[in-house]
Image 1 (cartoon, one colour):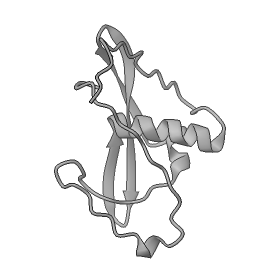
Image 2 (cartoon, rainbow, N blue to C red):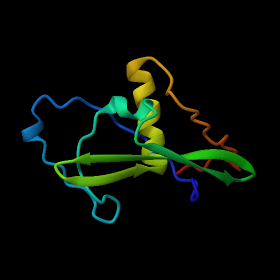
Image 3 (tube, rainbow, N blue to C red):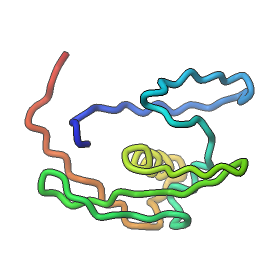
Length: 111
């Protein structure tokens, strides 16, 4: 949000999880792991901070998750995308206030 970037989330189904061999960009990805999607609409292991962007107040969400004795913090844009995805998949809103920023773009930028 700080840099007016555009993110296009892609969601898929893995039929063979062991065959999946991701090659993440280390400059952008800290770790690759799986987490239950439903956790992003439950009000468990979650915290939030109120922030302001371009005069609009919003909540920045943080989810704590542990798997295989490793702890992960899923937050910010990633958490926001997963909250929306879980709401669509499970056909219900999150059990907490989402409060996303109302984006006001100065103009669309085309390539």
